[in-house]
Amino acid sequence: MRPAWRVADIRAAETALMATVPEGALMQRAAAGLARRCARLLHDRDGGVYGRRVLVLAGAGNNGGDALYAGAALARRGAAVTAVPVDAERVHRAGLAALHSAGGLVSDAVPDRADLVIDGILGIGGRGGLRPRAAELVAAAARAGDGPAVVAVDAPSGIDVDTGAVPGDAVSAHLTVTFGALKTGLIVGAGAVRSGLIELVDIGLRPWLLTAPALSVPDTTDVAAWWPGPRPDDDKYSRGVVGVATGSARYPGAALLSVAGALGGPAGMVRYAGTAADLVRSWYPSVIVTERTGDAGRVQSWVCGSGLGTDERAVAVLRSVLAAPVPVCLDADAITLLVDGSCAPLLRERSAPVVLTPHDREFARLAGGRPGDDRVEAALRLAAKVNAVVLLKGDRTVIATPAGAAYVNPTGTPALATAGSGDVLAGLLGALLAAGLAADRAAVAAAYLHGLAGRVAAGSGPVTAVEVATALRPAVASTLAAAPRSPEPV
Image 1 (cartoon, rainbow, N blue to C red):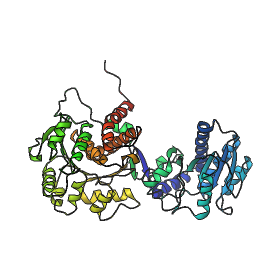
Image 2 (cartoon, rainbow, N blue to C red):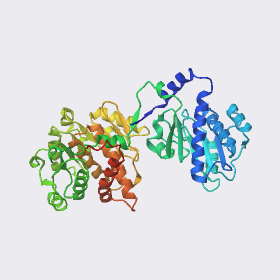
Image 3 (cartoon, rainbow, N blue to C red):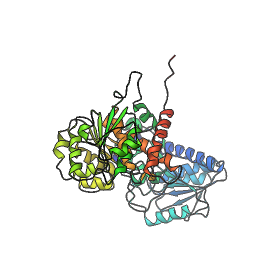
Image 4 (cartoon, one colour):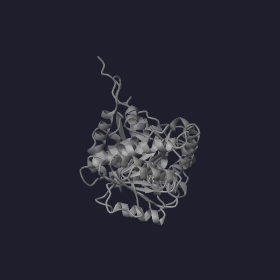
């Protein structure tokens, strides 16, 4: 897991660290790392640093100082560096002097050509979107030459570094070089999209971060380590049996898609209970099919809600699922049925875990309002309110637990914004629950693999939920193959 912190915690750590090092040492560490990464980017794109045109957009604070010192380092390697201060009266003087000494230029206008733009306008303390002068410079820089690479210093200027919200004009970076620790706004919400690739430069801050991270970001190693593979003594029952109560006469496809998602997971058996029984039987002969949840037999988890409807039959199905003493994943119509409160007692009385998978509109029905700018905090509040793990869908899906832990999935793709995609996710999540994963890990792993499947599917053209379900197996296989392996037994 990669941890990320809020700005206040990072500021406190920086203050503690600065008291132990010479003045300016942190800026020099940050600038050196920034220059090194910019040089590598120029080498990859243009074959080297020498002769490349570098534009530094320099704000008034330390962020501008980092950018100017990095520009000076690139100038010493032969780059043609031009700095444009946002406010010539408030530029970082020592950084500007270093740039002058290295042969860099200062201008009040963006040059016509640039190979690389370094965004040093606002640091992590910036609030609100870009001011007009800064927004004009950013727009002009984007038009310089043939589309220069944009590197943000610590965070793209104009984003909210705590929430990832973009309240106005902001920089869109190809790469963000951030210092000391990941910031939450770089990996959630619109800020994640604006940040591009993220590279963390170690400046010695981590030992001084004494608070728990605000959220964590899973990677392939985490998901592969959690994946419950079959053991030599397993059978289809011991690997986990997932029950799927989805679909209706109006939405029979939801049953097929959620079953497909469940079959892409690690469980040993899938049982389907619902009105699409004949259709499921014809598509998936390995699935044990019945029309009623009460006749389904023993399961280790339930998936309920996708295409279920909201009539009396659907209410009865949801009540039956919630009465079962096993983990439950509630999606779509099951979430809608929770809103009137009639199933609230069953939800409160449960000792087995519950995972809710709302999109923003479903979230609003449960929480009384849309998530707003701070999606992490909103998901945490709802998780505490309903005493369930909340998987808040989005380009950067947020998973929140009642205990206050939060995770952000890094594999999301806009390609997953297609009808039925969430049904596949719910089925996969249910299979992970049935195989024995804790609710938070099951939600994190399902979101991660679902995102990878969306990316695989997008590689062959327009994406439907059928392609996402088909891509689950390649996504799982690539994840497990990428994990470190123990030596083969003799």
